[in-house]
Image 1: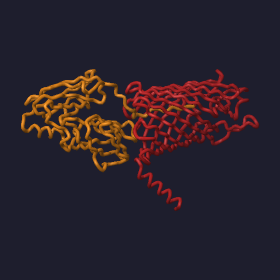
Image 2 (image 1 turned 180 degrees about the horizontal axis):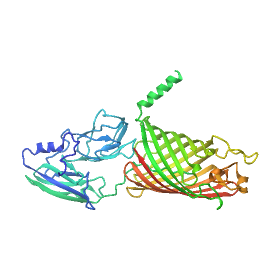
Image 3 (image 1 turned 60 degrees about the horizontal axis):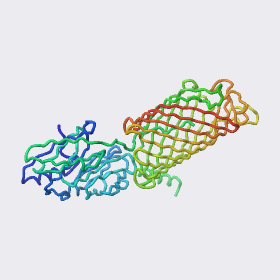
Length: 223
Length: 290
């Protein structure tokens, strides 16, 4: 099976909006393969397509998405959304979490809670929002706020399908938490056909995956 | 309000802030090589051994507020020596620790205060007794790769029994000791899976050195008792010393729950009267969080 069309936790998949936009025209899709520089499939890459002719304004809808907390980890690791999306942060652990972000695209804080917070968090500015938990320092996740309704995320096999997309020319770019370099440098122009699929492949240079360790280490004693 | 009512109120408050207690929170195995187990100065007295230690920790955490966390833990451990079996030991330690974070986020500095009491049962009962520790540690993460710690600790041991006096007018409670220390430590990821820890501590207080009869040590000692754990005609001396303690280890982070480590520790103790001992310890350990 190829990749998922959209991250599974999106309640209002952007694809629905894309379908609505495409009702008056035929639609194609882009089948994307993302690999690391060593050739291995790369999961959690966000692929965004921006129509060169405009007409697909992001933020016009009221999408909802979910960033869960399970076993003291955020799930998913990368959540792509479009501008204007409201994200719920349910805590399914039996302990409290304290979610925060210092990212310029969205600074917010959900002080200690368990279960469902009172209100979702709305993301109004495009960019990458890094999430943390003030109680469990190793917890980290990313909300990618796209400036287009056309986006997807690669699966474990590095594959993703972007579409259906109205026919036309798009600027397509790829982002990953470990991307070594600027996201803009990954952009390329692709012509989406009226029907059928277009294949595209990215091979990304990656930075090492340094994360705050969760595993216990010895403290040392013996004096 | 009665004392019982206040206690119930405290319990109710803690329960409201509690995480469920984990019967088994962490378990570990350690193989330890110590080349100067007796902490002796002279070649004739220096003797090493290998020990295997196993530990299991259960804990309950209480998030008291956005910045404060209380953790209560029970640590059950056992150590077995290959040669000096009199040092085989079982320990049950109760620890209460409080952590306060000065700000929001993973890079905010944190202060941890802890107090613990342990019951230590040795095969040779002369060492059996209670061990108390108080500790304060300030930690600050600089980046995902680097964390720095500064700590100060006090520890005290009290043996159940005092051995018969070897020398009149000189105490025989050699296993009643206390000391304090100041330490620094850095943990650094050198790759996403390998973490190097380097630490230095300076201890001031009592040390126990076991030797054959030794006049300089005798003159410098605060207490003396026979120590058959290391053989006949061996005596344990309590000395006041300054100890430099250097540690270096590398850990392989197997996954998010477990690590394997190889560590080296160098101990250099200088006691009153010009007495000095050195020891080298090598540890191989496995730790798993549940």
